Structure formats: structure tokens, C-alpha cells
Length: 469
Image 1 (cartoon, rainbow, N blue to C red):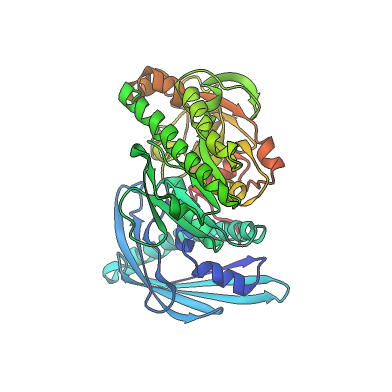
Image 2: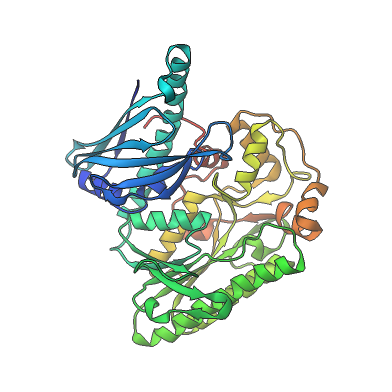
């Protein structure tokens, strides 16, 4: 039996911290993608008998192999403590006690996590000791990640207004899952836009390809956050380019027109629509790009221009509109980092091309908090770059990623290699593109970047370090 204890201190009252853990999204926000994926949030919060389902990554498989883990809650004593145990899964046993203690009546809470775990098949001796050592290292990394997430999310919600009703398209995507979880943790009512028949009262049917959405279900919504669109990765064939273009433009126009039609009821609403730094074109050299700069040239610049223009009906009707020009999202759950990290982990990583192109990047957690900030802050309007304050060249990106993973990073990838997968145009517009974006407007708008520099950002999203809590 292995025993592990971790203590996290946060600057919030115990009742607030316990309430956050009870809300939908907490398990998703606290689970590092490098450790696994949440398939089902707890079925009844933290109450006795509530179950959560996860897929736990098998070590050294980069998430290619996952094992099912069912956790059952018990020992529910709000706001003091709760427990979960492994009902089924890969270990011999697992019991996790969560105790919340008042460290300071002025608003300091300690979260004490105590874990008792047994290896599978009753393994003992040297293999058992190796299990203990490996488990402790993994738990150190996981709880460092959890501590950062918990503090940042609690701080975020403490600065925001009363809960609102927010509709989200693309809620099942990499960004959407984390955004929905973040908003749920703040007590906001989240309504997902879905293409199938709704299964719960918080789902709204839509069919953007046919120009259909249940407008009446949007009437009680304060903000629509629009993330949906055909994944951009893939060979730039004409059919793929059409899907990328029309999936964004038509769906955005549908939502903008619908919100415009609802505007005569006098309710203040907002449309927060995804866009991308592709707006600026694939190569503007060393030019520092802010939101007032003209669009560049190329396919993705054309997509972004039409994408943002599709919001016009809502803006013209008095709906507040924000266009989030997203850079390279750093997440172990999807996107470029999820593809590169396993390669770098083998020691075969390196920069693409000559490494001189600028990369405007942002961690997924800073991105979803940026979305939440612009959605919940009245008065913010127009485009905003969703990129960290410190863009880097591709050469520096490879160096930092190699250092975080403790691997060499000298194997340069020739510029011709991405063209084999993406086509010549796709390689130019995606893999070899560069934008030196400015985060000045986001900072002026009050956005807080928990990870302004690449090293801290990669360490966080890869859960690659252990820090004191």
C-alpha cells in the first residue's frame, strides 16, 4: 500500500472552494491531459454514490493507450470533506480523501489530499517499491498542475460578475471542453449547441449547414461563444478548403443573424466568435501585429476576413461582438503540441524549416480564461489577439520544448516535409507560417496571462514539473 499527501493553499473561503469542487467541470479542469481524459463528470456532484468516468493514459504511450477508471464518491461532508475511491480500474485499490481546512478566517483555505493506493495484482518486493516511487513522482506532477489550475480558476471567478447564461458551439472540441468546464466552475449556466436531437434541457439544436437554429432557445442566453468549424489541419485540397471556409462563415452568419432578429426584445447580448491570427497572412516578417493592422493575403487571411465580416448582422443590430484571433494553442490534448511532444520525447524533435518564423502562441488555459473574460466583461468589443505577450521564433520554440522534456532538439525538419502532409499551400499557410502578434489589447482589456512565457506555459500544459504548492 502506498500513501501520499499533498497540501494546497488558496486565497479563498472554504465554502467557495468546496462549491467550486461541486460544480460541473471541476474534474475536467483538474485532470492534466497528459494523465488522462474525463469521459463523464460526476453524475451527482460530490454526493455519496456519484460516479465519474475517466480514461487514464498508460505511461510511456503518449496517450495512445488508455484504461477505463470509474471513481465513486462517498464521505460527503460539505464544506469539510469528500472522498472518492476507484470502483473499477487498473490499480489494486485507490482511496482519495479531500479535506478542506480553514487556514485563516480572512480567506485562506488548505486543501489536504490524502491517497492510499495499492499496485495491481498485489505486487510487492522490488516491483512494489518501484510502483511507489513512480506513483509519487506522477502524483507530484499532477497535484502541482491541479494547484495551479485551482488557484487560477478561483481567482478568475472571484473577479467576475454574477452567473450568466452562455451558449457555446464547438463545446466538444479541445478548447470547447475546457471552456465549458471553466464556465461551469463559475456557476454559469452553459447551453451547448448540438447538431443531434437535444438530450438535456441545456442543449440547443442547430444545423449550420442548412441554416437552422432553435432561435427561441437562444432568447434567454446572455452570450453566445462560437467555436465550431471544420478542423483546419489537413491537406489543402479544394474540398478541404471549402469545408474550412463555409463551416466558419455560414455558421457565424447564422448565429449573427439570429441574434440580430432577437435584438428587438431589448436584452443585452454578446457574440464572441473565434477567429485566428491567420488574419494577418502567413509571413509578415518581424512586423509586430496588432488588431488595427490590415489583413494579409492568402487563403487563411481570406477565411478570417469573411469569418469576422459574417458577424456584421449582430453588430449592426447593437449586439456586442468580439472576434478572438487565436494563435497556436498549446495543449497536450490536441493541436500542434500534441503532435510534436511525442516526437520530441523520442529525441527526434527540432524546428520546422529555418526556424526564423515567429509563433504567436497561447496555453489552452489562458485561452479559455480569455474567452471567459471577454464574454463576461461588458463594454469589450472588436477583435483581440489571443496570444501570449512573448511570441517566439520557431527555433526558440524547439529549444524550449526540448528543455522542458529534457530531450535534444537539434534535428531540423526540412521545409519540404510538411508539404508532404499538408500540400505546398497548407505548409506555407500553417506549418511554416509566422505572425509576431501583440497581446497589448488583451492586456489593456484586463486579461491576465498565467503563462506569459513559453517555458512556464509548456511546463504547465505538459504537467512536466513539480512546484511547491
